[in-house]
Image 1: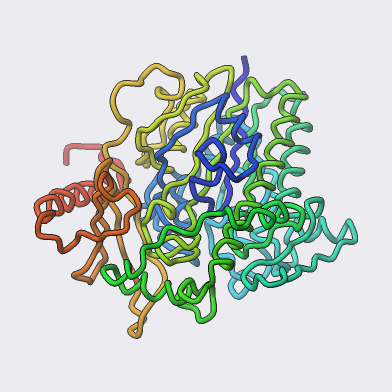
Image 2: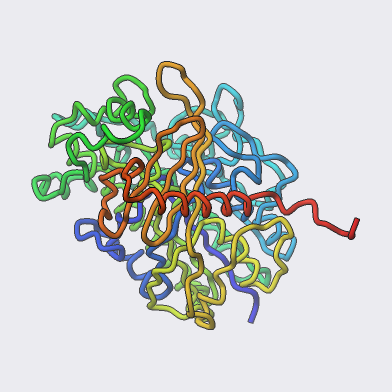
Length: 480
């Protein structure tokens, strides 16, 4: 049997509780749910950063943000970092991509053409950072031009924070799926194994699903639950959360949770879920083609997201220096019928940084010397189900400015099964949650006298994790 193909589907800003297989009773996600039944669903998978670029650089290198030196949005990954896609290409894989990559600065003010690339291993590169017309070399925009389509969004009456985007046929998510379908069909008869990265921009804000996908949620708007927010809970939390409660990212007028009505909150959740439903439809199209071409059994399929979305929980929208589970816990499903023992749910904690070494072990390649993640392959094939994969998970944030002094924010999170500790550089105040007694993370116990000994133990564990993120490169090659 030839090496397994790899279909790597990465959505943007999708929290863990947005799929039927993760317990959401409202969404319509039969295709991803079917994928979970054929594979392994991880209930506790955590991103290593709460924003795009450092998270993506981490899971593509298997190295933490502070180690791979891509710590924040707007930075570019150094050229000497080694992506797992490059290692796979060196091992004979034909690698392709559609959609977003975002491991380099790609703001139009910096890059007028498209996102700068290092030696990433992709020989087919259909790039579209997001659906808007910002770059002349955006391949999704070229597709629309070829079709003679001009995209126009429309406001939803009585719902100021959401819009209708193009119909399904002309959507960027559909374009990403079609590029994957073309690639899969074109490679079906070749001996070389392949990897294809499908990187949709959705369900990242703005909240703008197609009208027909949103309609079924608007019909049941009253049934949609409000965000998880306890009145005045932010008084005992950081100034950053208080600012973002008034305006996301600290930007005036951007999703001001404190000023929204019940209808506003519910319509935003409805739009977000509708975007996920569209993703599921396109994932189904891709899986169908794998089956039609006889490649499904020997294809490793990954479904995941780079980080989560607050979606009004704790009075905050979007993302930032916030480490609640909706921001860091992401969906993560892996399937490969011929190799992975399926129909399993795992509650052990894993990190996105674990993906790169997992893929290398899956194809029998040696681990890259600079890798810091831990392979999941033994868990996936069912040969090692004893004990936890990790005793804790670790996340970093080095980005953005808030407050009157506009000081740059640096923070670290350590999460165990029972507790979560968040430490902010330069601040005496932080966050501590007892997850057994307070799974919604509403009550900050940082100053609670009964938790000071626990806090000190968690500080030590956080210190140990930070020491583990020190770069293992260059290798030691002699005694002195």
